[in-house]
Length: 110
Length: 110
Image 1: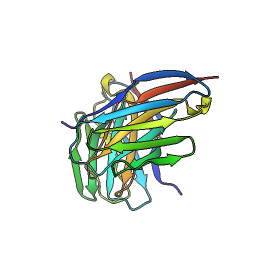
Image 2: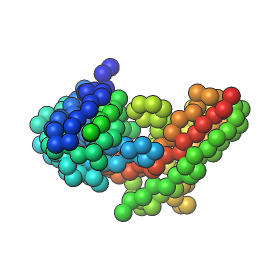
Image 3: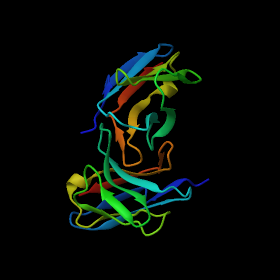
Image 4: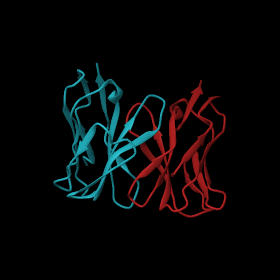
């Protein structure tokens, strides 16, 4: 059972570079989320989606974009990386139960 | 604004001790309260609580929700070094979001 798969696991970006964090789930969940977790802090919601074609901003959306063209995939795009985006990013999905998390992407912007 | 508060933020105990972790919230309408254990990677699911006063139990861990007083507790008896982790409390806001608390960092010393 794959569950929620995130890639890459680690990445170092230079300031101003762009990248896409990939997230895919094979559980046919409608709800998907992107969180960031800074050291010693809880998870903060960046964007979420309640189904294919529908996305909405969470608590900390600035500097990010998402798309949801299929039920399975929910990529997160950073257009102009900034040091403040150094964090661990988690993708999650849910269907009226607990949230299932990917293994996380540790991103460092230098 | 929905808010989840956890206490203590950090706790150090010795093996065999019993610990109680607290989660209080200021969300009036939610589907469930969830507890997660986070070691080095993604949060792993422990409990989902939907009804007040009904204890959920799994081995040495147990949890209960009090909707009247707006809190939940997670108990761990006979702690082991493998229980060392960050314990996260979250509220399921009907799929729109999971509102996470900051977590309690538990360290169990041999």
